[in-house]
Image (tube, rainbow, N blue to C red; front, side, top):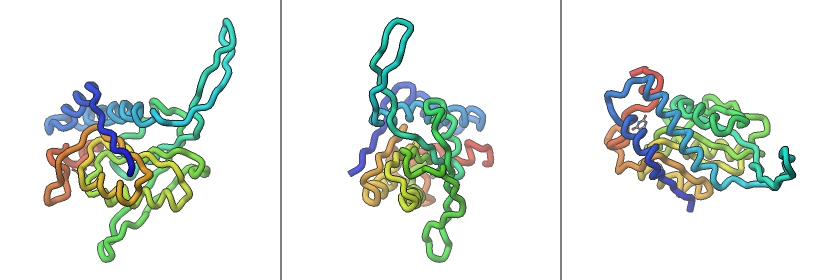
Length: 208
Ligand code: URA
């Protein structure tokens, strides 16, 4: 069973209060999404593998450790893009991919309409981002598409998670850990997270 990590950090809690506020405008919302994503990526990178290295200081040789995996950030279009800058602040050497999915109205199956990934993505630890883990259908499919392309290590980052989405990912992809800034109680009849923060994509890009 994959891990669900929900941050209790006071900085994240305070920023979540601002994000949830319906009065928060697009500029501020976008900035705070980036800040929360950055703080969450600090938590989500905690278990990355390390290797021993020797570093020559001005005084002596120090035994140090550095991250022993290549990294990639893959936002799910469109709202996931809002989290990219925040992750890049802590992982500036990460390569960035993008994945876009829509649901076929006839088959209801997820269809990949856009996918551009680093050439060596299968060798990288991939941080897949989407601010809202609601039904989990998109995230489940995106993880499946990444695995089809050979990716072995995926960590899913969202701002808000709902029980339905967490259950879907944990059942379909028990190897994928989920990091969330908050865990809400349910979805409403329109698939919105309750109490949630509204449509994350619209609020990030000011398209509401
Ligand atoms: N997507 C959103 O942007 N908001 C929700 O509450 C659910 C899905």
